[in-house]
Amino acid sequence: MDTIASFFSFITTPVSWVIVQFHSVYGAIFGPDTGWAWGLSIVSLVVLIRICLIPLFVKQIKSTRNMQVLQPKMKAIQERYKNDKQRQSEEMMKLYKETGTNPLSSCLPILAQSPFFFALYHVLSSIASGKTIGVINQSLLDSARQAHIFGAPLAAKFTDSADKVASLDATQVSVRVVTAIMIVLMSASQFYTQRQLMTKNVDLTVKTPYMQQQKMLMYIFPLIFMVMGINFPVGVLVYWLTTNVWTMGQQMYVINQNPTPGSKAQDQYLQRLLKSIATHNEVRSKRRRNIVSAIVAKGPDRNDNERKFVNSLSKTGLVAQPDGTVIKGEALPEGEAHGAKRQQPKRQPKSKRQAGGGQQPASKTSGTTPSDDAADAAPKTSLQKNDEPKDSQPKQPPRKNGSGGARAKAGARKGQQRPKHPTKK
Image 1 (spheres, rainbow, N blue to C red):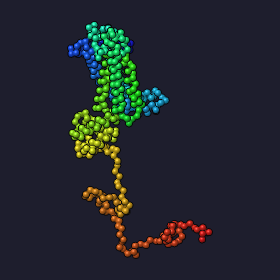
Image 2 (image 1 turned 60 degrees about the vertical axis):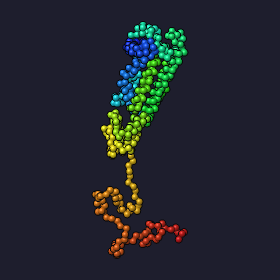
Image 3 (image 1 turned 90 degrees about the horizontal axis):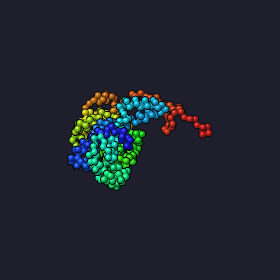
Image 4 (image 1 turned 120 degrees about the vertical axis):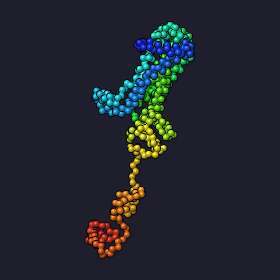
């Protein structure tokens, strides 16, 4: 760990300068030699770094969602070119280029803050060794060595010996208790953040290997941090716990305000949005109007959560418009009836079909229509007997059956009869 930290020694001067600037502010409030002054300086360093990394975090969210959407296509490419690795790589890169997806974007926030993490580790290790580093001179070094957080020195580790901890004016028990609690909190926050992402902000209708990988990392990462945490100084644990809490809060905000389409979080968000619209009869913010507009623009391509939202909105007498607003008492927009069953005309009884002569049923609406005129012009069928004498009607020639008789006897089978067997005559 010390070798890796020394590799990032070029950034230790900026990191130490930022910590000293924050320490001068908090030292005037809590005292320069207190753990609050130095601990809050480290926390402020984390907040400053994470604010600068917000654009990378947004890019990470977009990349993660694009990777989830592209998983079926990627799997199809792998199956199609499983015997040609070069062509498979070319098709993958072509797919990334067409969709604007960068697989490395999901790791950018971690990679970007890694130099600051190791630089802080290098600064605290130098403080524990009694060496000046960066802009931390001898007086600031003595002040940092006297700073304790809940009885544990800022530069102490879980694995430090009792003599080394005693040189920092502390006990080994207090150091191990504080570091153990911080390691557990750090691992728990990491696990909760990943679990929240997997259970609420993933489209569960799409089963991909990417989801299985994320599920494995959800259990592996906390174990890695737990094992590595025993070698981190207390100040580094403060840094890592703060960045995990920041990530957890940032993830909760994104899930609540901009959930992944098709996820459980989107269903919960649309239910809250529906309740707000039904209460005020309007979409009250521009961001929400943009979301409603995007749902309307999808048309028949909406997922189950979005169709449920539109149908529930129509039940309240409101209809979403393409600009994201809602209006009352209007018909559903074109294409909204997607998924609705087509109404088939009711089948009439046989007696009515014979009486109507195949005519269409009369319209329920009042007034005449072209179909009514056509129905009046058509000849009507009557079941009453004709008054004309029988002689005037043309006689039909009698039908002969196969035996030569004029009419078939009642109950006799029509058509040519099979000759009887000679023994039955």
